[in-house]
Length: 154
Image 1 (cartoon, helix red, strand yellow):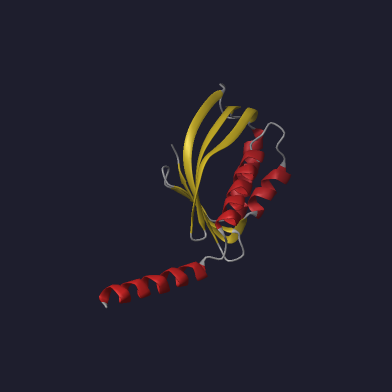
Image 2 (cartoon, helix red, strand yellow):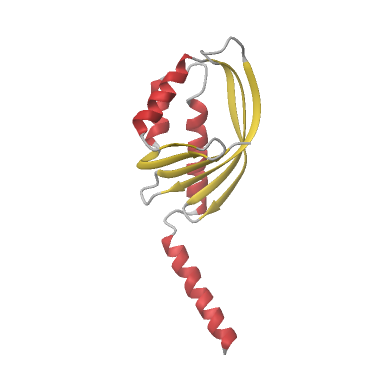
């Protein structure tokens, strides 16, 4: 009888959990790919404020963009946009992001991605070339906008 009760409770919990999952795994994967595409587009040699504004349009009004390793967080779109526009002064020679893996949870995706680029920041006299693998989690609100980004820098 106890086993039957446990099976019944497990079934109820699994149905109630899935009822709270507004988006399917396929939808969340598409949202992850759209995020990476927008992130990549905003750091190209020909990037304009149009690409920056598109990236910001993926975020909810009450978003958190948390850079865990650096203990830094954005919570205001105006500040985020201002900092991104400031980076347009950098000379981007090339930049690319490749998705290595995507894991899906309840209205959240985890993206393991490799970022490669060659950039000459406006405030430095030298060019920086990098290849780094990072993990990012994106949590979505009921409208499908990103409400929380956690960046775990490699």
